[in-house]
Image (cartoon, rainbow, N blue to C red; front, side, top):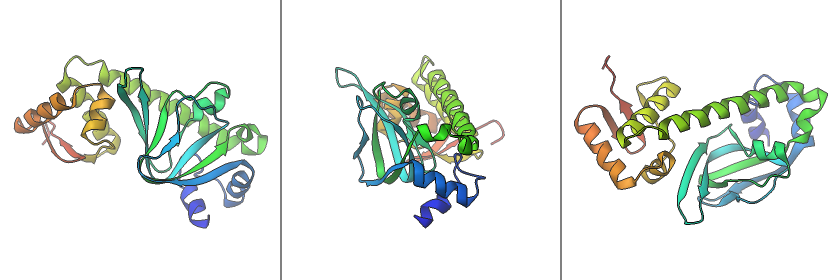
Length: 217
């Protein structure tokens, strides 16, 4: 747990806390800490939760499937990021997405109610900031998928990832099928478009690593 503590103190939710406060919070609010194999279900749509998860290592993905079996990827969760926080706050509203391990990962679950205690006010403020940031990311995704063409959707998404990384060379969290599901486009059509964009010098890529060419390149 010592290594987990060192890591947690660097995450958006815990950074800046002294170790004593963090240890007390973990001892009082921890529901469980578990490891998951790749593609294992961490949370299933329809469950109700009293806590939220923090990815300690590895990565998870959020999926939703309709009655016809069509899959939509809503996002990814990387080390230090949280998930299921909205449903933990709502309490009796079932989780609307399924959370799966994208790669082998370790997840810590914390009770939501304890964050409202006076001694954890600082963490609650950070939690609310995270909620606001995730709401922004959802709005960003809606902007991507609202574009008319496959090319426009790809460029919108890749430019957002480039800006987020702050470098011309960046790695996205999705493989090709997952990216197609995330952007709600056909995988084959998307791959053909990526090939055309590369041939035209708009982008360069190697698997999940991309370079989006700009006017300054």
